[in-house]
Each structure stands twice: as C-alpha cells, then as structure tokens.
Image 1: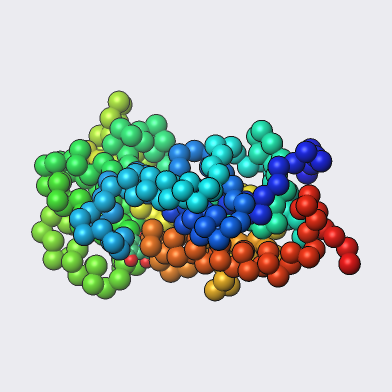
Image 2: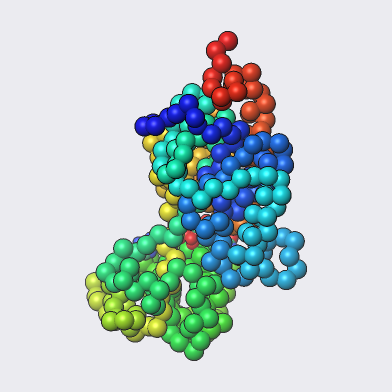
Length: 325
Ligand code: NAP
C-alpha cells in the first residue's frame, strides 16, 4: 500500500462494482445504517446495461430494459444515502481488521468490503476477432441480434448461453449455425432439444474457429474440424461468441480463495476466506449467473457485513483503526 494516509476517507462498507450485486448490497447496507460507498470504474449497471430485455427478473409483468432496471436500483440505493464514486480501485490491503482501499484519486479506510466486480465474456483469441468486434463479431445476441434479420449468423460454444442465444437469434436470422468443438453440447437437455427441433439451426460438430475474416465487416469464418483434420470456410454476416465467462478477479487473486476457474469461493453468508471480506454476483463460484442471483448475493453480503461489523465494533476506533484490547 503506497500512500496510506491519515487523511483517508472513512466508511463502514466499501462495495467494489455497481452491477446488480453491488447495487443490491448498497441498498441493504445503506438502509441498514452503514456508511457505504460504491465504486464503479465504468458505467453503473455492469453487463446487464447492454441487455435489451430482461424477461425473468421477478416483479415486472412486462419485460424491462436492462439499463432501466439498474437505474431504478441505483436511485433506490441513493434514496438510502449510499454514495457512488466513479473511481477505479487500484490497490487494496486486507490485512488486519481495518481494510484499506486506494483508488486513482483517494485512500479509504473501511471496516468491511464487498467485491462485486462481475465477469466478462471469454474471447476466442483468434485472428480477426478483436478487429471485427462491433463489425459482425458480437458477444451479446440480445443487443445485436436484431441487426441480422434474414441474415446468416453463427454462434460459437455449446453451453446454455450459446444454445439459448442461438434459439433467440432464429427470431431474426434466416439461418443460425452453432459451432461446437466437441460432438456433444454442454447445454441442458431441454434446451438442446429445442435447438435440434428448430429448422433454422444447424450444428457444426467437432469444429473450432481458426480465424475471423473480412475487410471492413465480417465476411467469413475459417473453421477447423478437429476430427477430420480439415479446414473449411463458412460465409456468415455475424458471429456471436458464447464460450464462457471470465471473472474480474484481478483485485482479489492471490489473496482470496478462488475455484479452479478463478471465481471467488464464499460461504452461504457470502463471506470469503477473510473475515469482513465478502463477494457477490458473477464474480462468485455458483451455478446460475443471473440478475436475480446477483441481487440475492448482494443482499446477503450486506446483511452479513452489517452483522460482522456489529460483532467486531469494539475493535475499531473512530479512524477505523484496530483497537488493541
Ligand atoms: P459454459 O457452460 O462454460 O459453456 C461454455 C461453452 O463454450 C462450452 O460448450 C465450451 O466447450 C465452449 N468453449 C469454451 N472455450 C472455448 C473455446 N476456446 N473455443 C470453443 N469453444 C469453447 O458457459 P455458459 O454457456 O456461458 O454458461 C455459464 C453458466 O451459466 C452455466 O452454469 C450455465 O448453466 C449458466 N446459464 C444458465 C442459463 C439459464 O439458466 N437460463 C442461461 C445461460 C447460462 P466444452 O463444452 O467442450 O467445454
């Protein structure tokens, strides 16, 4: 910690990340009386901001736009006096009872921390992918699917996301290829059956994308069939990549216990292996990454942080420093 200062700003709870998990944590913590600050380096809302329609978040009979949903959450958190700061957290000290958080502009002392930094789509890391992103290469069918009416698109991946989004894309595209590296999909059986029954969907098995080609706009995929050891070309107007998610764990790796994929391991109370340090949302090891599970994590983490602070209050002085007994 380079510039820990006596002038550090003091909070009961620091929340890092203002997606649905961080926002729900902010609502619960601030409403519970904790002096709470939420840091976000980008847009408030996280990944859900780029989702056109959220259909499965309870409480909305009609579908709700992802941006509108998080705006409501943010206003609700502000109503309870949670503070928002558009600052990037650059360093953290979790040693000792008081945690120190440095951002690009200030230093903060806090009793507890909730990490809600989310996750991002995994890239294929093949030639052409980065250059043609936004020009035919997409990671969000709900955002970009409508651009491909009566066009030919491909989805890469064989998990629930890939297969569900392929089915969704048949609302627009005239043909949807699913390109999967094995001879069996990973998606749950019911979703697979829906895809197999859809006449617009064709699965290309045992195949990986070798490169993505086009001048200004995506024109074709160069594919490699791993069983036949054969290269082929697939002309497409769009490709949607759904090969999993990567946790944004840069701030916590090497300090907090992670699973083999880099997601944070928590207990049912969302506490990590460090007392007073919690994680919530897509960053966490779990089976379902949805808004509804993110807000559940956030609420639980805030509730647990509040209880932990209460139980340890005697160890903090007014500077949020450890009081030795
Ligand atoms: P996932 O289950 O990890 O699937 C990723 C897919 O991408 C796998 O089929 C994998 O192939 C493939 N893949 C990975 N790296 C690749 C590469 N470099 N090249 C080609 N293919 C690659 O990820 P997900 O589909 O995003 O789902 C994540 C979690 O969210 C899962 O637990 C899922 O059940 C859940 N989810 C739930 C819902 C729902 O409940 N409605 C919807 C979406 C997702 P292999 O199969 O060969 O490993």
